[in-house]
Length: 129
Image 1: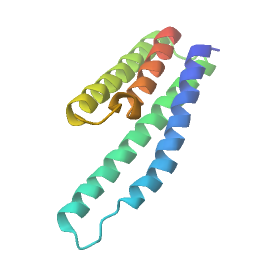
Image 2 (image 1 turned 180 degrees about the vertical axis):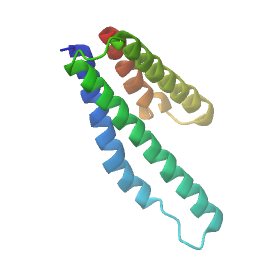
Image 3 (image 1 turned 120 degrees about the horizontal axis):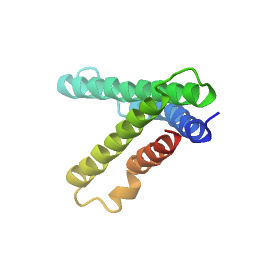
């Protein structure tokens, strides 16, 4: 058992559930009318990207929990290291994007704090390695 991996896995699965369920409801509120061609296309692309992220969270959470509960893989440390770098990268991209796109938005770094979540998961995953 790897407590750091289990902690990271639980956090990621909880994020998946929030993302897929609550986020799906929020996206539904933004649904444009069927006759708003370009807006409908952009919304559809947003929904597809949203659930792509949902799947990423589900897959990463499953891997973290699976590796944290078993000792089946010889390259476990390498997998943890790659996942840690992945979450560090996602968090960094999120932070930079929030800084560039959110100019003038008060407290944007905390209001859009998904980067903090990603960096916490990266740290836990790195410690699991």
